[in-house]
Length: 309
RNA sequence: GCCGCGGUAGCUCAGUCGGUAGAGCAGAGGACUGAAAAUCCUCGUGUCGGCAGUUCGAUUCUGCCCUGCGGCA
Image (cartoon, rainbow, N blue to C red; front, side):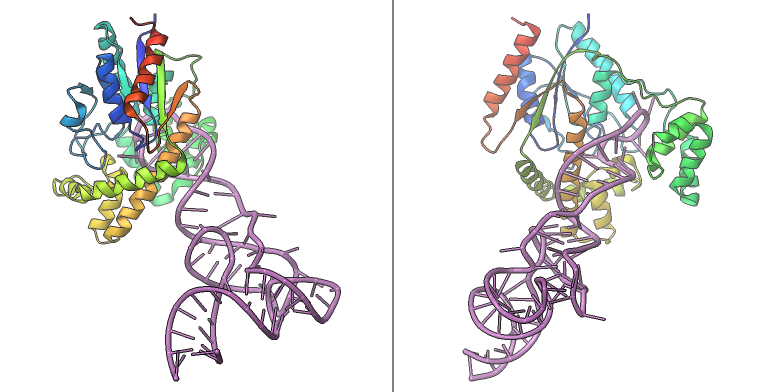
């Protein structure tokens, strides 16, 4: 008997947080965040992290669980989320995962088997130095010598994935590409999306608001507190651009425009992830969306699917 | 009204000494198994402002018209 699970995903700025909280209240359950940036403490404005008021008393898991200096990863998410899902199921609740990180959610639902070889190791640092010195294609050559099959699956310019593959290959393993035949959970997956023009308008407006609310000041605070600008959390959209602005490399307006563009591109990449997840039940949001109605519709489907009541 | 410079991809522009055109940006599609908001790959046909003339052939030359900007009245 598989454990039950409901997921609400969608590209950034489609209203997942709002709909998710309303849905969780209807379901009488708790939310597990499926977002790679909400895990970091101190990153609030730029990640659109729901505040106390927005959470409306609904318990949220996997938010603010990592220090900005720490590493977090898809594998860590998968493990921790799985544990909470089991606990909630045991307590008679159907857990609700809300978030947009494609790899996180897909790995959870489809049971990706991550290698036990840890990231952020001494080896990784060495590989980073090697890359600086000899360039990314040299990294590919190295991987090709150890594991030609792994090399074939990665483009010679793809630095991050090459470093990871080498890290694993040097430990005598291969990065898995295995596909499970079915979902790990008795899951019902909902997606929020919007017509491209509408989505981009929402993104542009939201980025504008973030800077008005003090995104630049938030990023500055992280730097002052000693977070190096290479830290994972400062690679997030809105943060990496602000680091450039604060160093005087670009103007504030350029910084805002770049953040908007990068967020638009990010939303597009998110949608690419979702296209490979045919089990998503899509709901369209528009300017005049009736959120109450939307949540009702989702809930109705959910009751039917799980034969509740 | 006259003079000058423009009108080419969604935007900014290049170019064709006459053989129907190409960069940057924007945008689109894709990959992804411990960085994933990361990282990487692929993709450029548009009445070359309109009409007419010269020409085998005009976006390119000529004329007229429309239109934007600047200057002079």
